[in-house]
Amino acid sequence: MGPLKGLRVLEFAGIGPGPFCGMVLADLGADVIRLERPGAPPAPPEDFITRGRRTVGLDLKSPAAIAAALRLVESADALIEGFRPGVMERLGLGPEPCLARNPRLVYGRMTGWGQEGPLAQAAGHDMNYIALTGALHAIGRPGERPVPPLNLVGDYGGGGMLLALGLLAALLEAKTSGRGQVVDAAMVDGAAMLMAPIYAMKARGRWTNERGTNMLDGGAPWYDTYECADGRYLAVGPIEPQFFALMCEKLGLDASRFPDRMSPAAWPALKGELIAIFRGRTRDDWTALFEGTDACVAPILDMDEAPAHPHNRARGTFLDRGGVVQPAPAPRFSRTVAEPGVPARPDTEAVLAEAGFSATEIAALRDAKAI
Image (cartoon, rainbow, N blue to C red; front, side, top):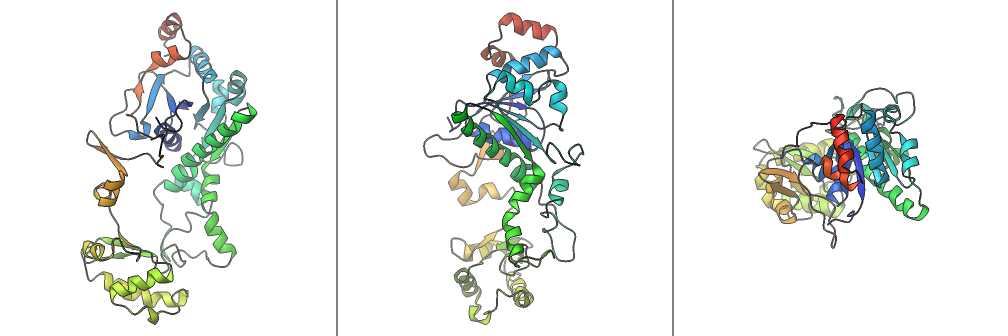
Protein backbone atom coordinates (compact mmCIF):
# COMPACT_ATOMS: atom_id res chain seq x y z
CA MET A 1 0.00 0.00 0.00
CA GLY A 2 1.60 3.26 -1.10
CA PRO A 3 4.66 3.75 -3.32
CA LEU A 4 7.08 3.60 -0.35
CA LYS A 5 5.93 0.18 0.86
CA GLY A 6 8.94 -1.77 2.11
CA LEU A 7 10.86 1.34 3.21
CA ARG A 8 11.67 1.45 6.94
CA VAL A 9 12.33 4.80 8.64
CA LEU A 10 13.35 5.48 12.25
CA GLU A 11 11.92 8.77 13.54
CA PHE A 12 13.27 10.18 16.78
CA ALA A 13 10.24 11.86 18.33
CA GLY A 14 10.14 15.65 18.17
CA ILE A 15 7.79 18.45 17.20
CA GLY A 16 7.02 20.36 14.02
CA PRO A 17 8.80 19.56 10.77
CA GLY A 18 10.33 16.21 11.78
CA PRO A 19 6.97 14.59 12.57
CA PHE A 20 5.48 16.24 9.47
CA CYS A 21 8.17 14.57 7.36
CA GLY A 22 7.38 11.27 9.09
CA MET A 23 3.69 11.72 8.31
CA VAL A 24 4.40 12.37 4.62
CA LEU A 25 6.55 9.23 4.36
CA ALA A 26 4.09 7.10 6.34
CA ASP A 27 1.18 8.34 4.20
CA LEU A 28 3.08 7.13 1.15
CA GLY A 29 3.49 3.65 2.59
CA ALA A 30 6.80 3.74 4.50
CA ASP A 31 7.03 1.79 7.76
CA VAL A 32 7.90 4.69 10.08
CA ILE A 33 8.95 3.64 13.58
CA ARG A 34 8.75 6.50 16.05
CA LEU A 35 11.15 6.30 19.02
CA GLU A 36 9.62 7.94 22.09
CA ARG A 37 10.14 8.05 25.84
CA PRO A 38 8.85 4.92 27.62
CA GLY A 39 5.32 5.25 28.92
CA ALA A 40 4.22 7.86 26.38
CA PRO A 41 0.44 7.44 25.98
CA PRO A 42 -1.08 6.46 22.64
CA ALA A 43 -1.71 9.44 20.39
CA PRO A 44 -5.30 10.77 20.50
CA PRO A 45 -7.43 10.58 17.32
CA GLU A 46 -6.84 14.25 16.52
CA ASP A 47 -3.05 13.80 16.52
CA PHE A 48 -2.99 12.88 12.84
CA ILE A 49 0.50 14.39 12.40
CA THR A 50 1.70 11.08 13.90
CA ARG A 51 -0.57 8.95 11.75
CA GLY A 52 0.68 5.74 10.23
CA ARG A 53 3.40 5.08 12.80
CA ARG A 54 4.17 2.46 15.38
CA THR A 55 6.09 3.65 18.42
CA VAL A 56 8.92 2.15 20.46
CA GLY A 57 9.44 3.42 23.99
CA LEU A 58 13.20 3.88 24.55
CA ASP A 59 14.82 5.77 27.42
CA LEU A 60 17.77 7.31 25.61
CA LYS A 61 19.43 8.08 28.96
CA SER A 62 20.00 4.34 29.31
CA PRO A 63 23.05 2.72 27.66
CA ALA A 64 20.93 -0.36 27.01
CA ALA A 65 18.40 1.78 25.12
CA ILE A 66 21.16 3.38 23.03
CA ALA A 67 22.42 -0.08 22.14
CA ALA A 68 18.89 -1.12 21.22
CA ALA A 69 18.48 1.97 19.02
CA LEU A 70 21.68 1.11 17.18
CA ARG A 71 20.36 -2.37 16.52
CA LEU A 72 17.19 -0.85 15.07
CA VAL A 73 19.39 1.31 12.84
CA GLU A 74 20.82 -1.84 11.30
CA SER A 75 17.52 -2.71 9.61
CA ALA A 76 16.45 0.85 8.75
CA ASP A 77 16.67 2.54 5.37
CA ALA A 78 16.48 6.08 6.73
CA LEU A 79 16.51 8.00 9.99
CA ILE A 80 14.91 11.31 11.00
CA GLU A 81 16.17 13.41 13.91
CA GLY A 82 15.39 17.02 14.82
CA PHE A 83 17.58 17.81 17.82
CA ARG A 84 20.03 20.69 18.10
CA PRO A 85 23.40 19.99 16.47
CA GLY A 86 25.53 17.74 18.64
CA VAL A 87 22.74 16.14 20.69
CA MET A 88 22.67 12.88 18.74
CA GLU A 89 26.47 12.73 18.84
CA ARG A 90 26.44 13.08 22.64
CA LEU A 91 23.91 10.25 22.85
CA GLY A 92 26.17 8.03 20.76
CA LEU A 93 23.63 8.03 17.91
CA GLY A 94 25.26 10.48 15.52
CA PRO A 95 25.91 9.74 11.85
CA GLU A 96 29.29 8.08 12.43
CA PRO A 97 28.16 5.19 14.68
CA CYS A 98 24.89 4.77 12.78
CA LEU A 99 26.58 4.59 9.37
CA ALA A 100 29.17 2.22 10.83
CA ARG A 101 26.30 -0.10 11.74
CA ASN A 102 24.45 0.42 8.45
CA PRO A 103 26.54 1.89 5.59
CA ARG A 104 23.42 2.26 3.39
CA LEU A 105 21.55 4.37 5.96
CA VAL A 106 20.26 7.79 4.91
CA TYR A 107 20.56 9.98 8.00
CA GLY A 108 18.14 12.93 7.92
CA ARG A 109 18.78 15.93 10.15
CA MET A 110 16.11 18.61 10.61
CA THR A 111 17.10 21.91 12.20
CA GLY A 112 16.21 25.56 11.91
CA TRP A 113 19.66 27.02 11.33
CA GLY A 114 21.57 23.98 10.02
CA GLN A 115 24.38 21.89 11.44
CA GLU A 116 26.93 24.70 11.41
CA GLY A 117 27.10 28.49 11.26
CA PRO A 118 27.02 31.24 13.91
CA LEU A 119 23.39 30.53 14.87
CA ALA A 120 23.51 26.72 14.76
CA GLN A 121 23.14 26.36 18.53
CA ALA A 122 20.52 29.09 18.99
CA ALA A 123 16.87 28.37 19.69
CA GLY A 124 14.30 29.51 17.17
CA HIS A 125 10.95 28.93 15.54
CA ASP A 126 9.56 29.15 12.03
CA MET A 127 9.22 32.93 11.98
CA ASN A 128 12.81 33.40 13.17
CA TYR A 129 14.18 31.23 10.38
CA ILE A 130 12.14 32.82 7.62
CA ALA A 131 13.02 36.27 8.97
CA LEU A 132 16.60 35.78 7.78
CA THR A 133 15.60 34.78 4.24
CA GLY A 134 13.61 37.81 3.13
CA ALA A 135 10.38 35.79 3.12
CA LEU A 136 8.85 37.27 6.27
CA HIS A 137 9.78 40.82 5.29
CA ALA A 138 7.91 40.39 1.99
CA ILE A 139 4.56 39.38 3.51
CA GLY A 140 2.17 42.08 4.69
CA ARG A 141 0.47 45.34 3.79
CA PRO A 142 2.31 48.55 2.90
CA GLY A 143 3.36 50.52 5.94
CA GLU A 144 2.36 47.71 8.29
CA ARG A 145 4.24 44.99 10.15
CA PRO A 146 5.27 41.77 8.38
CA VAL A 147 2.65 39.04 8.82
CA PRO A 148 3.72 35.48 9.80
CA PRO A 149 2.33 33.04 7.18
CA LEU A 150 1.32 30.57 9.89
CA ASN A 151 4.35 28.25 10.21
CA LEU A 152 4.01 26.88 6.70
CA VAL A 153 7.10 28.37 5.04
CA GLY A 154 9.80 27.36 7.53
CA ASP A 155 8.51 24.36 9.44
CA TYR A 156 6.62 22.53 6.73
CA GLY A 157 7.37 23.77 3.21
CA GLY A 158 11.02 24.68 3.72
CA GLY A 159 11.55 22.14 6.49
CA GLY A 160 9.66 18.86 6.68
CA MET A 161 8.71 18.68 3.01
CA LEU A 162 12.25 19.34 1.80
CA LEU A 163 13.62 16.85 4.31
CA ALA A 164 11.29 14.23 2.81
CA LEU A 165 12.52 15.14 -0.68
CA GLY A 166 16.15 15.00 0.48
CA LEU A 167 15.69 11.61 2.10
CA LEU A 168 14.07 10.14 -1.01
CA ALA A 169 16.79 11.60 -3.26
CA ALA A 170 19.53 10.10 -1.08
CA LEU A 171 17.70 6.77 -0.92
CA LEU A 172 17.46 6.70 -4.70
CA GLU A 173 21.20 7.40 -4.99
CA ALA A 174 21.99 4.70 -2.42
CA LYS A 175 20.29 2.11 -4.61
CA THR A 176 23.11 2.49 -7.14
CA SER A 177 26.04 3.47 -4.93
CA GLY A 178 25.27 1.19 -1.99
CA ARG A 179 26.26 4.04 0.32
CA GLY A 180 24.17 6.14 2.65
CA GLN A 181 24.82 9.75 3.58
CA VAL A 182 23.70 12.62 5.82
CA VAL A 183 20.89 14.94 4.67
CA ASP A 184 21.24 18.33 6.41
CA ALA A 185 17.83 19.99 6.03
CA ALA A 186 17.74 23.49 7.55
CA MET A 187 14.58 25.55 7.56
CA VAL A 188 16.53 28.72 6.78
CA ASP A 189 17.92 27.04 3.64
CA GLY A 190 14.55 25.65 2.60
CA ALA A 191 12.68 28.92 3.11
CA ALA A 192 15.33 30.72 1.06
CA MET A 193 14.92 28.18 -1.74
CA LEU A 194 11.15 28.67 -1.74
CA MET A 195 11.85 32.38 -2.33
CA ALA A 196 13.79 31.68 -5.55
CA PRO A 197 11.00 32.93 -7.89
CA ILE A 198 10.62 36.13 -5.86
CA TYR A 199 14.36 36.76 -5.86
CA ALA A 200 14.27 36.18 -9.64
CA MET A 201 11.62 38.89 -10.04
CA LYS A 202 13.67 41.22 -7.87
CA ALA A 203 16.75 40.58 -10.02
CA ARG A 204 14.71 41.59 -13.09
CA GLY A 205 13.55 44.80 -11.43
CA ARG A 206 9.99 43.53 -11.00
CA TRP A 207 9.92 43.36 -7.20
CA THR A 208 10.60 45.98 -4.53
CA ASN A 209 11.31 45.67 -0.82
CA GLU A 210 8.19 47.67 0.03
CA ARG A 211 5.58 45.24 1.29
CA GLY A 212 2.19 45.16 -0.40
CA THR A 213 3.25 47.00 -3.54
CA ASN A 214 4.18 44.09 -5.78
CA MET A 215 2.32 41.79 -8.13
CA LEU A 216 1.94 38.79 -5.81
CA ASP A 217 1.86 40.38 -2.34
CA GLY A 218 -1.52 42.09 -2.57
CA GLY A 219 -0.24 45.23 -4.26
CA ALA A 220 -1.86 44.49 -7.61
CA PRO A 221 -5.65 44.91 -7.65
CA TRP A 222 -5.99 41.73 -9.69
CA TYR A 223 -4.13 39.65 -7.09
CA ASP A 224 -5.64 40.52 -3.74
CA THR A 225 -8.42 39.69 -1.29
CA TYR A 226 -11.68 41.66 -1.07
CA GLU A 227 -14.31 42.02 1.61
CA CYS A 228 -17.92 41.28 0.67
CA ALA A 229 -21.22 42.60 1.97
CA ASP A 230 -21.43 39.91 4.66
CA GLY A 231 -17.92 40.53 6.02
CA ARG A 232 -16.49 37.45 4.34
CA TYR A 233 -13.82 37.50 1.67
CA LEU A 234 -12.88 36.58 -1.89
CA ALA A 235 -9.51 35.70 -3.40
CA VAL A 236 -9.27 37.57 -6.71
CA GLY A 237 -6.40 36.56 -8.99
CA PRO A 238 -6.99 37.07 -12.74
CA ILE A 239 -3.38 37.85 -13.68
CA GLU A 240 -3.59 36.98 -17.39
CA PRO A 241 -5.35 39.50 -19.66
CA GLN A 242 -8.04 37.08 -20.85
CA PHE A 243 -8.90 36.14 -17.27
CA PHE A 244 -8.94 39.78 -16.22
CA ALA A 245 -11.26 40.59 -19.14
CA LEU A 246 -13.65 37.84 -18.07
CA MET A 247 -13.72 39.11 -14.49
CA CYS A 248 -14.48 42.61 -15.74
CA GLU A 249 -17.24 41.30 -17.98
CA LYS A 250 -18.95 39.56 -15.06
CA LEU A 251 -18.57 42.66 -12.90
CA GLY A 252 -20.05 44.89 -15.61
CA LEU A 253 -16.76 46.69 -16.19
CA ASP A 254 -15.20 47.56 -19.55
CA ALA A 255 -11.74 45.95 -19.50
CA SER A 256 -10.53 48.37 -22.18
CA ARG A 257 -10.69 51.12 -19.55
CA PHE A 258 -7.58 49.60 -17.97
CA PRO A 259 -4.94 49.42 -20.73
CA ASP A 260 -2.18 50.11 -18.22
CA ARG A 261 -3.39 47.67 -15.58
CA MET A 262 0.11 46.17 -15.25
CA SER A 263 1.53 49.54 -14.18
CA PRO A 264 1.70 50.05 -10.40
CA ALA A 265 0.71 53.67 -10.96
CA ALA A 266 -2.71 52.48 -12.14
CA TRP A 267 -3.32 50.09 -9.27
CA PRO A 268 -4.82 52.37 -6.58
CA ALA A 269 -7.69 53.58 -8.80
CA LEU A 270 -8.60 50.10 -10.03
CA LYS A 271 -8.35 48.66 -6.54
CA GLY A 272 -10.70 51.35 -5.24
CA GLU A 273 -13.29 50.35 -7.85
CA LEU A 274 -13.01 46.67 -7.03
CA ILE A 275 -13.28 47.31 -3.29
CA ALA A 276 -16.57 49.15 -3.81
CA ILE A 277 -17.97 46.56 -6.23
CA PHE A 278 -17.17 43.48 -4.13
CA ARG A 279 -18.67 45.09 -1.03
CA GLY A 280 -21.98 45.24 -2.87
CA ARG A 281 -22.83 41.51 -2.65
CA THR A 282 -22.22 38.61 -0.30
CA ARG A 283 -19.35 36.20 -0.72
CA ASP A 284 -21.65 33.36 -1.69
CA ASP A 285 -23.42 35.54 -4.27
CA TRP A 286 -20.06 36.26 -5.88
CA THR A 287 -19.13 32.59 -5.67
CA ALA A 288 -22.28 31.61 -7.54
CA LEU A 289 -21.36 34.12 -10.26
CA PHE A 290 -17.68 33.19 -10.66
CA GLU A 291 -17.17 29.59 -9.59
CA GLY A 292 -16.18 27.27 -12.42
CA THR A 293 -15.18 30.13 -14.74
CA ASP A 294 -11.72 31.32 -15.79
CA ALA A 295 -12.08 34.59 -13.87
CA CYS A 296 -9.88 33.20 -11.07
CA VAL A 297 -12.15 34.32 -8.24
CA ALA A 298 -12.65 31.98 -5.27
CA PRO A 299 -14.32 32.21 -1.87
CA ILE A 300 -11.94 32.34 1.08
CA LEU A 301 -13.10 29.47 3.27
CA ASP A 302 -12.34 28.88 6.92
CA MET A 303 -11.25 25.49 8.25
CA ASP A 304 -14.83 24.50 9.02
CA GLU A 305 -16.02 25.37 5.51
CA ALA A 306 -13.12 24.00 3.45
CA PRO A 307 -13.77 20.25 3.99
CA ALA A 308 -17.41 20.73 2.94
CA HIS A 309 -16.69 22.49 -0.36
CA PRO A 310 -18.04 20.40 -3.28
CA HIS A 311 -14.68 20.28 -5.07
CA ASN A 312 -12.82 19.16 -1.97
CA ARG A 313 -15.51 16.57 -1.27
CA ALA A 314 -15.34 15.23 -4.82
CA ARG A 315 -11.54 14.98 -4.66
CA GLY A 316 -11.46 13.53 -1.18
CA THR A 317 -9.07 16.31 -0.23
CA PHE A 318 -10.12 15.94 3.40
CA LEU A 319 -10.96 12.78 5.33
CA ASP A 320 -13.27 12.21 8.26
CA ARG A 321 -11.97 9.46 10.52
CA GLY A 322 -14.23 8.92 13.51
CA GLY A 323 -15.36 12.54 13.49
CA VAL A 324 -11.82 13.89 13.15
CA VAL A 325 -11.41 15.87 9.91
CA GLN A 326 -7.92 15.85 8.47
CA PRO A 327 -6.16 16.47 5.14
CA ALA A 328 -5.77 13.38 2.95
CA PRO A 329 -2.38 12.16 1.73
CA ALA A 330 -0.98 13.93 -1.31
CA PRO A 331 -0.03 13.60 -4.11
CA ARG A 332 -2.22 10.93 -5.71
CA PHE A 333 -0.89 7.72 -7.27
CA SER A 334 -2.72 5.72 -9.94
CA ARG A 335 -1.52 2.28 -8.85
CA THR A 336 0.17 2.38 -5.44
CA VAL A 337 -2.59 4.22 -3.62
CA ALA A 338 -1.53 6.05 -0.46
CA GLU A 339 -3.74 5.61 2.61
CA PRO A 340 -3.35 7.42 5.94
CA GLY A 341 -2.90 5.22 8.99
CA VAL A 342 -4.18 5.72 12.50
CA PRO A 343 -2.30 7.98 14.97
CA ALA A 344 0.91 6.56 16.44
CA ARG A 345 0.35 3.46 18.53
CA PRO A 346 2.76 1.76 20.97
CA ASP A 347 4.23 -1.46 19.59
CA THR A 348 7.62 -1.70 21.29
CA GLU A 349 7.97 -5.44 21.71
CA ALA A 350 6.74 -6.32 18.22
CA VAL A 351 9.12 -3.86 16.57
CA LEU A 352 12.06 -5.14 18.63
CA ALA A 353 11.17 -8.73 17.78
CA GLU A 354 11.09 -7.83 14.07
CA ALA A 355 14.58 -6.37 14.49
CA GLY A 356 15.87 -9.69 15.86
CA PHE A 357 15.62 -9.15 19.61
CA SER A 358 14.88 -12.35 21.50
CA ALA A 359 12.22 -12.58 24.18
CA THR A 360 15.00 -12.77 26.77
CA GLU A 361 16.65 -9.61 25.44
CA ILE A 362 13.35 -7.74 25.41
CA ALA A 363 12.65 -8.82 28.99
CA ALA A 364 16.12 -7.63 30.03
CA LEU A 365 15.52 -4.22 28.45
CA ARG A 366 12.21 -3.96 30.29
CA ASP A 367 13.79 -4.96 33.59
CA ALA A 368 16.48 -2.29 33.06
CA LYS A 369 13.70 0.26 32.36
CA ALA A 370 15.37 0.96 29.02
CA ILE A 371 12.01 0.36 27.29
